[in-house]
Length: 433
Ligand code: KE4
Image (cartoon, rainbow, N blue to C red):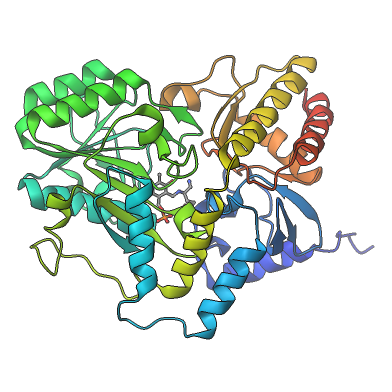
């Protein structure tokens, strides 16, 4: 009797094949579904709020490439800008006018940025900002916060040390202790701990780097007190304040989190939205800091594809589209509608569930209260999250495949799309109980 083996789906086949040549079958770990289990969906095309997998199944997409697809996938104006730019050649390794236009637009939209350097990833943006802060201050110590992710530069792959004010331990193999011995990891939203750190070592701290709206421990807002005190302490002790707005920049509002909170960092890292789906990121801030960058200053940083003309065309077109009247009101209303509907559906099924939305990003938590720290977020019901994730995937709704990720809506997530999502959630909440 031959065992009946359900035929492998195309996604299964592709996943098995991918793992032969690429670790985990993916080019970025979160895509591998290891936190939620199951087979990653291999996407063939995307349009508006949707994308389709290799088996032809359509999903309402709430990843949006982790933020870049804010105007919706394959927006005609973005695609045309890319096609037109590509027709003139893909990369020159020489300056172009488009890079000036992008730099001028970023400086105009983000007043704290007087000068900016374009790079190709958020990791490069934060890594370079850290190097600049250290080069400008001549200090080595940096402060980050548990649950914030700033890309995979060695000195940022750090978890909190054993004691509250002890230096970090690497979160990744291959990162020597020496590379993280200057990295202090504190608790997000913990003002007294930040004050203690500055009281004991403030004149040796080169910078503090923070996600002012955190999106890598699900969605967690910084309290205004936390950011205000952080700004005061950095000013008082001559430390550089770096806002990592790779995710929340142009996502929570046109002015980013710094515009929302009314706090001016010394340096800002940007990414995602400013590339519109192609590799553009940036770091920038006070001119007297940026003037220390090579080739005019002593802090080195470089990149073959930095300011790539095709990527800049996608980014510039996206930056123009998000400035259309009412863009953020509509985007915020969509995220709010989604979170409100999910909460109501969970309540009907008597499931502990809450949610939050800031501009076009949202989070939901299988717990009674919205978390304000990494530990509170991790205390959520992971098993229930995973059952919900797969239930929604079966219903054709693609949320982030991990409890510690945030979600994103686009300008194309209309009321009808949101309401379809909520109806699906109503069915799934009943099923998972
Ligand atoms: P990239 O190097 O992935 O372009 O950016 C790193 C980065 C820096 N800062 C913040 C606040 C970020 O959110 C990121 C990257 N975000 C993740 C989402 N959790 C990207 C998804 C992935 O790693 O595949």
